[in-house]
Length: 274
Image 1 (cartoon, helix red, strand yellow):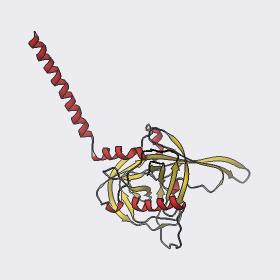
Image 2: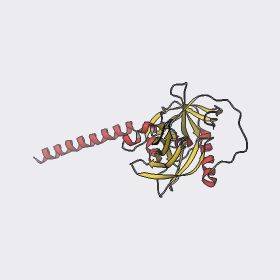
Image 3: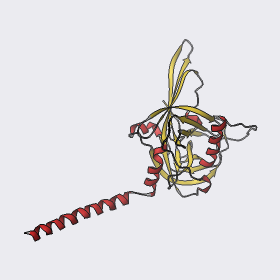
Image 4: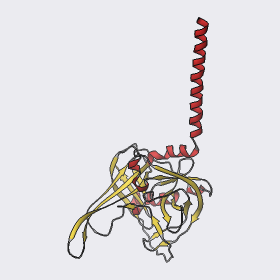
């Protein structure tokens, strides 16, 4: 009888061990460089929401309205500095009675943000939220980016962060070109040179969010898709973006003493208005 009990115990133990091994094998097979990179960077990715209360006028009367838009951004420090695109937070050309920017972190915490500085020409803005010990994204070296490497876009496309348990939305592709030059967008006054091109899917609301590599490091800021193409997105290289952000942190603006006389092409910027 004792032998039977011992034999059954061994079978049960081996069965449980096999289940554990199988589970570990399945977990390992699901874990990839891309999924690991997303897990590393996601805690620092935020949704950005702009609310502008305005007074509009038609031929006969005035009325109040609210202009809202959403975009993406990412934390670059524990003390709450956030990089995003300038067009995510720019004023609409109306008489404004109130203007507010809120930031939603992964997990759902909401913060009011202040504007530290804005540079419309490079389409970069620096925000600040109050607090400490925030998760933030690690920054890579955009000078080391190569064509063909993995690229993952993270952000808040079409306001999906708040519909996905407050987690950033990911799309993956490759870096399809570097140093892509588009000169000056005469409609917005923005310079679009030396961009990182990717086929990772970008949608309205992705702009301002990070483009990361397979290590989870930020290599660019997702900024626009080209209007006359399919699935071609462009990102501002992070090395350049951080130079602008650092000057915005010190001075609140970028001082320029020259002009540009360049051509332009049509772009679709990623901030969603509703």
